[in-house]
Image (cartoon, rainbow, N blue to C red; front, top):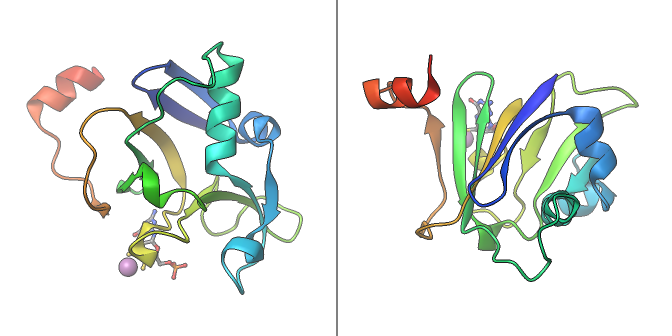
Length: 153
Ligand SMILES: Nc1nc2c(c(=O)[nH]1)N[C@H]1C(S)=C(S)[C@@H](COP(=O)(O)O)O[C@H]1N2
Ligand SMILES: [Mo]
């Protein structure tokens, strides 16, 4: 399963869950961030920093204002960077890939809502413009003609 990354400053990449997980420098038991929840997860911000470091980006470079993740069912969430300090991606439960939330599931312990714990994430987007004041989530809006053109569907 490939996950599409799009970073407005540092480019695009399609990456497998295995590669994504291997690159992540900080792995935790999900329970450490979300008491009572089970599985293996990796820290989002540590992973993001390792990912861009691998692409030659200096560590002092500006960080995103927000992250948007989108799921296989078109559910998505946009979360301000300052709510993501404890965020993790869950990738394994009981020694196997996820039965619920495959390929990876976001957890946002510092987030404004449990609704931000997006299952089955397949797109990860890092934005660097206006800081959204609040996190937002829900099913994607009807696709506009402009968006269809941009996506070359
Ligand atoms: N892909 C996807 N992720 C999702 C949702 C969804 O509809 N699709 N619902 C969200 C909402 S509104 C909540 S409250 C939680 C529910 O998590 P649970 O299924 O573990 O109870 O998942 C969130 N993640
Ligand atoms: Mo929810």
